[in-house]
Image (cartoon, rainbow over all chains, first blue to last red; front, side, top):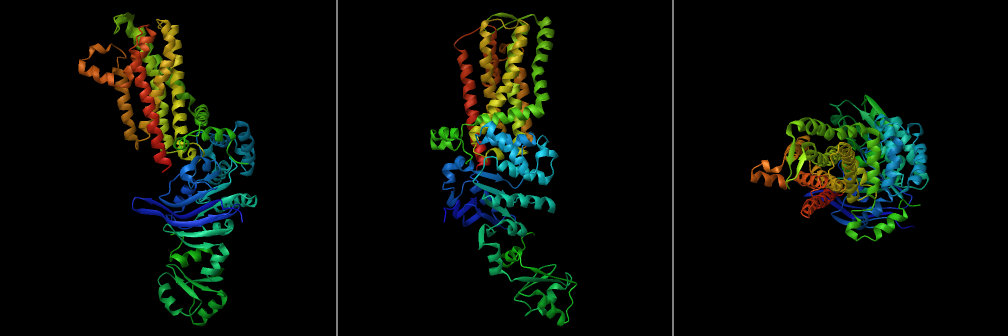
Length: 308
Length: 277
């Protein structure tokens, strides 16, 4: 097995008394697409900044491409592509200029950067927008430009912090398609997200993070198998009745979660459970059988929803 | 293929470790960015700043100067009023150019556009960013100053061949102000605080022996003015353009060297604290 690209052991980042990251350990293999899944404030972005060599760890071990970021910050950063949570494109420059200038920050020659800029504009589907002002781009286009910019130095690892947060569904799918292509080409991806569908689409392996610590680790399928059932039955009886009805549902399914707006019943056969409910004389306002997702895993592990 | 060029590796490998994490030897890329940005959005502002000291020279030097006649400089030399204030305005031109870029422009980049955050996630170090921005501000100050000195030459206000040395002198003045300006700005958190910079700049411009000799002030006030940077610039440039040159001018040079170094050091430290925590 090839040496891992990123190794974190008992990684801690403390701001005063508060531990934003509290003893995280994980490894990312070359070519792997690895995710940090968790709610806002779980310590994902702080972890990303430490891996990106722009934030110094308080304690623990961290190695990126075999180098310690405390001593080799610039060397590490020269081999990373960074897509931050909020776009920080250079609004004083045009679209193509953003790529040219960013490439020069890495000490690359003007000629090389110009060639790559054109390739990357094509990759980001922004060929027509080269001379446009950054502010005139849509949210999805800005995001694609940020990703193109992160690729200008042909990085070994691409760090993506919440890549599709704030985008409409269509823009998200275009972006996922682009990221999937990178994955197929063998780029190592490290991404954070609080969208379980994103994690399922893009991650080979992931860790579930909450309050600065890792709750579970595995492939999306493994995590679902380990922490959830095959299917989930969602029933709604109206906000005021859910709790009362839930008591009468005990014994149905492997496990139930009562949320303010609905009851989730975990089972390998959702339809069968629904029949048992109606046989018992209960008639939900709406019902839905679906496959288990990482959202259910998260709920099981933390007792909370990902998006609150 | 990796994103590191051979030049980077050779350069940074020769630097000691602590410097290496601050400086990638690529301040040029930061300047290049500033040049492109200025070219595409700000060139009108650049041009307007150029004319300001020229208007002062025409209004005060030529206009008011007809009433004033001649002025006796610190060394006892009699010069026309225009020739007296022109070198001061030359120093002011360098100062204004340098300050504009290194204060308000830097403030916006820090607070709103997250430009430095982006730069520092590449292989650039905080010293690259500080030097690049300061050198760009310096260039703008130099551009104003060169234009202004051409006007002086045309109006016959360069009284000596020493005036040629006023060019490197204004470069140094611009470096000092750009460097200190960026350092101070990097600690600013609000518009109100930024206004303090204007509050200091205007009186400094008016009272630093710009329009009349320092001797009109009581002694204690002379001391205050002499502690401020612009007076040193005015004296240095005035000495050169009027041909009144002596070794004691090196104190003015030293003042600006210290100012520039202090500014670069504090800017670098501040950028590291803010963006590489």
